Image 1: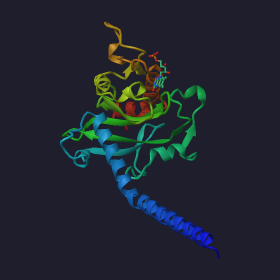
Image 2: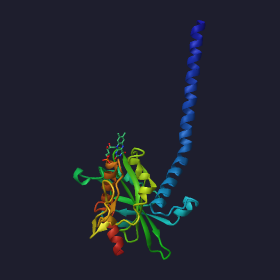
Image 3: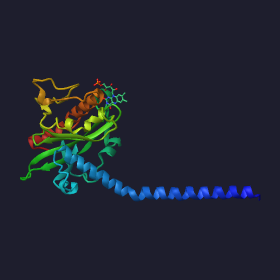
Image 4: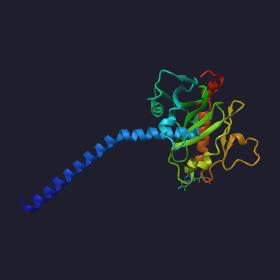
Length: 258
Ligand SMILES: Cc1cc2nc3c(=O)[nH]c(=O)nc-3n(C[C@H](O)[C@H](O)[C@H](O)COP(=O)(O)O)c2cc1C
């Protein structure tokens, strides 16, 4: 074989060897780091649940603070807790994709653009010192302008007064729709009311709540320059608080029948 043929062979061998080593390193790293990534994701979710309820103290451990939170699975249609599903392993997003555990939502009944709604949801309860309900934290999601926003809405024990709201995942534009994460905007939510005469009345407006509005208890300022994300948040909050969302559960809780 000529000298140039031999050196080409060596170059190819070294290149192939390098590719092989790199792919082994990358796939090993992916496998080894997966549990740590999953643990971080779970911790972040817990942080967001506590934050939505206004319970997060950044100086304390999230795990410790989360001990006061009880996870329960709910049958959405019946509005009742189910005890034969393990809340610690229940994956609501997976359930929403599974045709045996969810149903298609007709377009005209799907303002949050969910396409499918799961039969069961994972909710979080915080008890007071006597063991009564103090807060309930509900998962909410729906389409904004560019993305599905995933978050939590926390209600006080009356199942009507908002304790807080926050999104932990979305791809809206930073500075525009991304202002859903702005603490100043999130501070508007606590104290707002969801229902009026048993109907969902909470509304995120286009623009600011007018001064002197008679309905300001039910009205939330929209995000300026982000009307479409604002409309998405309005749609998803109203959907999840409504008949197809958590309204049956909240009514049962008020009657002590959940
Ligand atoms: C690059 C780019 C990103 C945008 N991102 C968002 C967004 O995340 N959310 C949103 O509602 N509007 C976004 N908009 C603006 C919308 O296109 C639309 O103009 C706006 O929602 C109208 O809001 P306004 O009536 O308050 O001006 C974006 C526009 C551009 C050009």
